[in-house]
Length: 178
Length: 223
Ligand SMILES: Nc1ncnc2c1ncn2[C@@H]1O[C@H](COP(=O)(O)OP(=O)(O)OP(=O)(O)O)[C@@H](O)[C@H]1O
Ligand SMILES: [Mg+2]
Image 1 (spheres, helix red, strand yellow):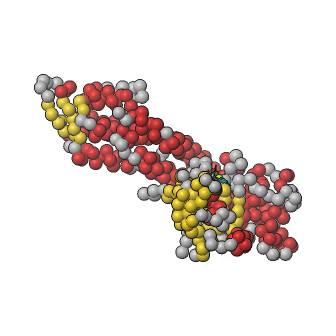
Image 2 (cartoon, chains in turn yellow, red):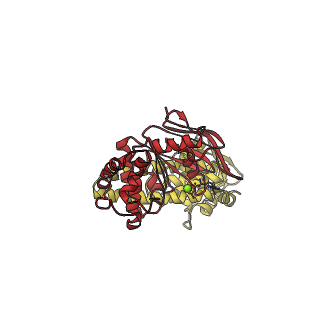
Image 3 (cartoon, rainbow over the protein chains, first blue to last red):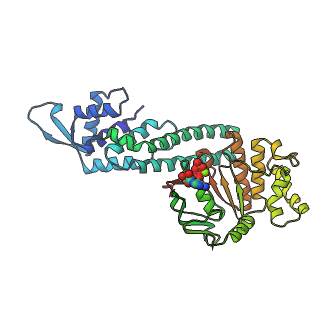
């Protein structure tokens, strides 16, 4: 499941790349992020509405004619700052993050951001959590040990994914850059 | 003062650069895990920190003393008196019994045989090896042999323990038992530990993790 937060940050990130019409935004989103589950137009426009209300984007120009398809959305300074801090802040180190991590990596590469640096931070956050769980495990009873192990194995799987992805960043960069 | 420190260490094997400006420091009593891809230079770094290899340039310090400028003989004395080692395959001496293997660093340091064996024996109880004192390495399981190797690494109460993939040949449960014992014993003795491992679950036993990539050390960003 991609959270509303991820959708909204992804659309904002795509707008940092270039001002777009709602239709193009949806098309770019679906190409890279929807994994076969297209983003409904309704959600695109409601998200854009919220972003505009919060001052993160503005309508850059209105071309001749009427209707939503004529509007081009432009990111504001505040919106760009928001994208920056979302990408920079490690995701909370809990299992099943692959979708968010994947989205962050692809978006960072699209924007020419240092994806490897973000992944290094994520690795540090994961290792820190694993160290905590190992500590809990050491002092705990068997139930604590089993619960901590569950977390440790999932985090370890994420780390394998992070390592493999780092090794493939150059290839991935070529795929997502236009 | 740092217990162990490498500053800008370069080392090549012929044309192959293994370390290209590696810097790392480990505080007294700290347990640091060295992670990184295969061939990145982890073992080479460990060997430099432990005075086994001498860097082409850069400095290595132990306990406030520069050790990369010592000659072969001085380094060998330093290793014998100050350092303990555990490697991936226990490297026990097959002709000796388990307790003689544990006593070996003391024997090599000039301790009399009876006294050395007296020091060695309590480790068997402590590491869950009671009854195996007289076995030879061929008669021990991998996990048992690795615990004997751990006892051998710690018996002389070294200032630093250097462990290179100490759990690499063990299944994950046995590996974790060895790590539990390694960490508990090192903490009890205040031993500084440098632990090379590519497994995150093993590295998580350390106080801190660093990553070696292309012969350089990246400290992790701990925000
Ligand atoms: N004795 C040697 N002679 C020649 N080259 C060597 C020697 N030891 C290591 N190397 C080379 O130096 C580089 C670093 O090797 P090192 O053993 O330090 O890697 P590592 O990180 O410990 O890898 P692994 O995880 O596979 O043990 C590699 O390119 C390796 O081939
Ligand atoms: Mg190695």
